[in-house]
Length: 399
Image 1 (cartoon, one colour):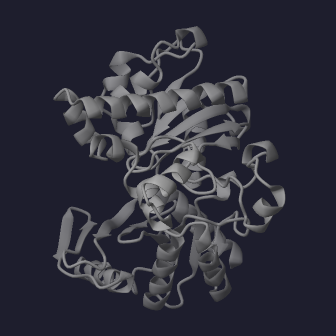
Image 2 (cartoon, helix red, strand yellow; image 1 turned 60 degrees about the horizontal axis):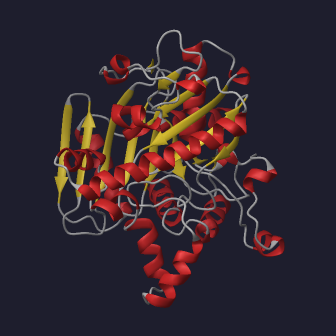
C-alpha cells in the first residue's frame, strides 16, 4: 500500500488540507475550514463522492482541525488508523534560516514563530496549524515546506534592495520571493511537457491566483521573482496592489491619518483588483466588465499592464526564453488574461493560438501554434502534491 501524507495549509482564518498518496498523486480526501473564530464558521470535507459539511462557530484552529479529524472518521478514514506517514505544512516565510523542507521540532516551531516579524499575517497562523496538528497526531513526523525556499539562492543583484546595507542586514531585509513551491513544481512539469532536461530550459512562469507572482528561471534556477520581502511586491493581485511608490504611503500617513495598522490593511486587504473595482474575484470582475463597468475595465487594464511590464523585464533578464507558462486559478482558467498579456508580441516570436487558448482542459497543454518558437503553456499547479512529496522525502531520509 502506498504511503499517505496529510498536507495542511493553515491561514489566518482558514485551513486547507488534503490526504494524498505522494507517489501517485491520488487524493483520498480534501477540504476547507473557513471563518475560524467567527460564529458562521464552516467546514466542507470531501472523501471520494461524499461531502460532509459543518456550519457553526469554530473557536480556533485546533477546534477546526478536531472537526476535520472527526469528518475523516465519519467517512471511514480515521487518521489514527490509515497509516499517515507524515504531515506536510505549508509555511510562508523561512527567512534566511530555512531554505529546504525541514523536519519539525520544538526548536523549528520557535524559529518559524520568530520569523513572524517578516510575515505577520502568515507565519503565526502556520505555527498555530503546526502546533494543533502535532497535538492531534502525536508521533507522526511533521515537515515544514517553505514558500520562500525555491528563491533562496537568487543572485545578489536580484535579491538586494538599495537601502542602507547595515540596516538591511540587521533586519533581514532582502527579496525572498513567495509561491516558490508552485513555481518549482510547474517548472518541473514544463520540462516534462517539453520532454527536455530542466537544466536546458529558460522559462518565465506566471502564477496568477488571488495572490500573483512571476518568476524568471534559467537552467532550473530562479534568477528573479516579483514578490519581495513580503508577498506585497510585484504584480497586481486580488487585494494587494503590487509595486507601489513608497512615497505614497508616507503621503497617506501624513495627510490621511493612516497609522501602521491602517497602512497594513490598505496594502493587504483593500488594494489590487478589489481596491480599483470593489471585487477581488476574477469571475465577478469579468461580469462587471461585460456589464461595461468602467472601474472594472480599468482594474483589468492595470492588471494586464503590470503583467506585460514584468514579461518584458524577464525576457531581457533571461536573454532567451524556451517557454512562457501560466498557472494557478486565474492563469489556468482565464483565456482573456493569457491572450491580453501576450497580445501583439509576434515580433518576439510570442503567439497565442485562439482556439487552443479557449479550449476547455485541465491538462498541461500548449496554447501557442504548433510551430511557435517560444511555446506558451498552461500547466496546472499542485502545491499540495509538491508538499506531500517533499515531506515524504524528508521523513524517509531521516529513517
